[in-house]
View: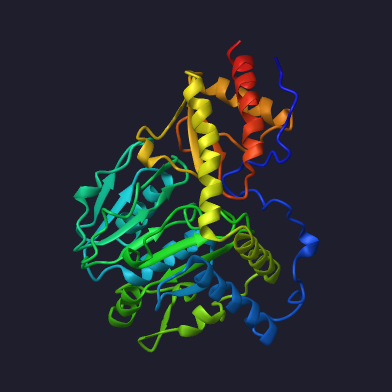
Length: 371
């Protein structure tokens, strides 16, 4: 039978992700609108975006946070183009974004001897094969496959190279070993439910040392330049952005950071996300027609949860359309390059009660599509 209780919030997209519970755009601090981002007021807001990120995440001493153009993609590519070339490089890929970084390294930068360690959707690479004398580029959480690294134990503390981590669907949702991560990138529209177009670049001391000792052999566009005269451009990490940001988006991001602190910080955000994953895990355990794309429970994402259904691809699309037409779940089809299935965002901005309400609807939509 068709369920009667619907999620209060049907937005389960994996990016841009759902706004936080209770979000109201009218509550944003908007005195920066219409003002220059270079004004004292604008700089203060941007500097706060950097410093509050560092404080709430509990970053180690010496780690810098900057707002950069181009969302998470821009932040990752800024790191690749600025930092690579001094050593060999290992690129780890088990979904579309990791594969994209491999393309950048192999086909665009054309780094000699670059190694690509690749796994298919649902699996992860053999992390014991990573050479930490090389620079290592990887996603912490594969947003399009629902596969994450299990922890940071595999990362060498005494590594020779840098670790460059795309953590856009992991920051504020998973426990990151900051001392083992030299570069971390993310974007506001993922775990925090912020707005798009802006990236966050976090640099540890080892990454800064590389920037100041290594000059890449290729030209760098202005939006990628992190140094001036051989020294780090410190202003970028104090809110002096390379190009003009949206101050409305900055206000929205600051609101999201305040919400994280109000619920109890990163630990509480992680707990919310893991509770959400638990709802889906219970449903999967009770129904043999649906399964996690990530085969190993230790590598299952608690944010971008990817599921396989025992239906043909067109039937899965019918499920997704049925749920959307009923106003129950929006944007939950799998990523275009991923196997046919369902992808449900379970980050902290999603209320567990909404996932509990969604599960009977999944069963109903499956029965309708399979009929």
